[in-house]
Image (cartoon, rainbow, N blue to C red; front, top):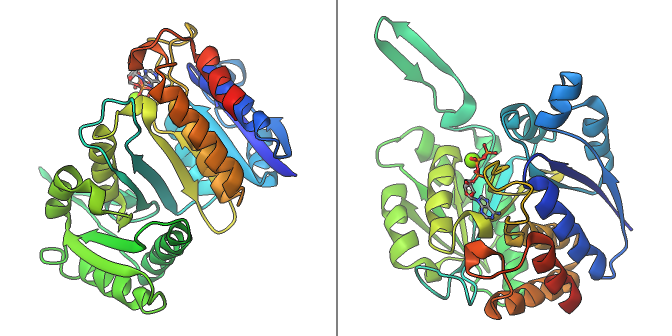
Length: 330
Ligand code: ATP
Ligand code: MG
């Protein structure tokens, strides 16, 4: 029995999350779903965007499924990631049949360090018209993100991938910070002799995610680079409606579609539930329910290839109808 904390949040979160929960229920895996509030709506009512009860419910769960928060996103999801110390941001990049992808045969995962780097938030104006930001790379945080990446590569290799980890950095210019990052990568790789390794400068990597994305398995990088690379990567395989993500640490897993609350289409049944269903697939794998994950992914692939989709993908179904098509096949 897995305890899942479900936070629908705002806007289309209220449509795509129920569709994904419907699909999860169809797997036959035993879940206990605990619904909790966060986002603009609860903020307007109570003055708090992320209530204490929600934090407690998240901590009590085996995994958290999150929809979207609107204006309050920084106070909700960014804060939640911090509280739960989810240091790895996981972004799968996969091309599905029936989706307008820029290339086919893409199936890799970007693992982005989520706690330090240039997003540490250490900025200052040191003189009039002179500002600086401090980029923090530590050995400890690098080690744990690399271990995470190699463990994922090991798991995926069992399921038939190449078993390779690619590190993106800029050690030629950022000699000290990325010097440490790259050195630590190869140190950690010593414990994973069965996994291939390679490293590229991030600018070259940016070209390769476009020119030869099919050659990657696990890509691991620092915070800012991962942020930029992953949006580009996802742009190759169908964009926001298709993109799931996970935030994983040693104790907690928080899973969310990359898109936001999309107020322009909210409440109309127009939202594509694919990103959130794929997010549920990631959550299933995190819970070691690999068989159920496989089933859901297969069902979704069939629905996509039959064109049983929401209008953004060219179909005529509503959010819940598309969810039902997937659930039915699961
Ligand atoms: P937020 O401030 O919460 O991020 P946003 O206005 O930036 O909201 P996003 O959710 O980031 O909206 O999405 C940007 C655009 O992409 C939206 O205008 C929306 O039409 C489209 N979009 C996003 N997610 C989906 C989806 N699941 N299905 C269909 N269209 C989507
Ligand atoms: Mg947005």
